[in-house]
Length: 430
Image (cartoon, rainbow, N blue to C red; front, top):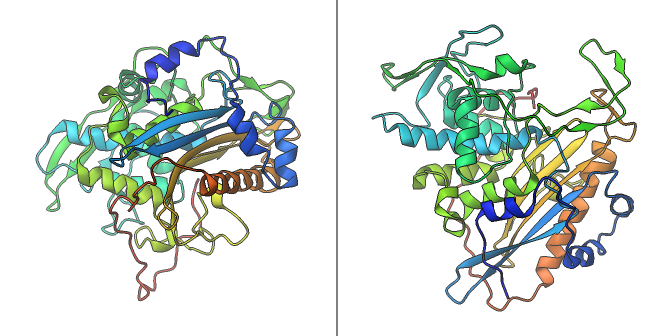
């Protein structure tokens, strides 16, 4: 029997501050089928690799309405992992929601923006060289954040929403344990509380919205400490022989990311308070760029030999760097400090299957952080690819009471302009 989705607040109460790791027997059965030596190595020692996996099974009823059930492997809400670029996903959702809620005539995701500076360390931004019109906008930031996971777009969306609103809005939606405290700019705690003044303009250059600088006064609760590793390199590249302190870093449990993605893909499957205030066009825009490939995109135009189709599709990133024609993956990934994370919805139109898969692991054999000696290529990515294929094979063989009728989301993807002679972008900060 399929379990109905329950509000997040119920889940949070059941996983209190002394939560134990949760593993379901179905997950053990599926993961036994993982074939590679790397997978066997990681699965034999999940604690060392700080491995957590959530498999979300989707079943449709006779009316084709989906229901969702999560299965867990070593999931623990208190087992910290660094979310890295994963936090770009909720900020993209919040940015579009904020634009809608401002209800200002002519203001939308394509409106030109100008970032000023009002506090030490802040950087102004008046132009965006990768945008078609050369001007910053929320639309271009979302593209850059999703297509290859660029960092500055995250900073700019953080500045637009504001630290206080980011955390209050997400907590109001039920994500009580979440903490988004930092920009990717090397700022200290006080600098991260301040956000830039921003102006929006229409196509004629007329000012349509002037947002003043903001400051978040309320302190965060850092009573739960997160320290990892046996040493780290400081800003002077000196080795400090003590664990790296993540206590004041961004903190988002893996299940939150799964629920965030589900709430935009299938809004009616989650409680009303958990949904984002998005119009149809905004939601379709998010879904398009969560699943579109760099090789399909004209602005920004990335060098697709470097930023190949599976570049941010970890569960399908094999040596071919190609994606199957009949599969689209709607997802967000993150990688930093030895952690790799992918939260995905997989849609296979040819075989009529769909499911969600979320996983994070830590690949840092020497236990030293900030030394850029992580086993992403030898452990992390091969493992995620192998378990991704394992769950896909399981879904291909899984019996369903009602075969789903899948036709995607009616999205129209771009086609790269073959007559465009611009050189593709080769260097990014991600």
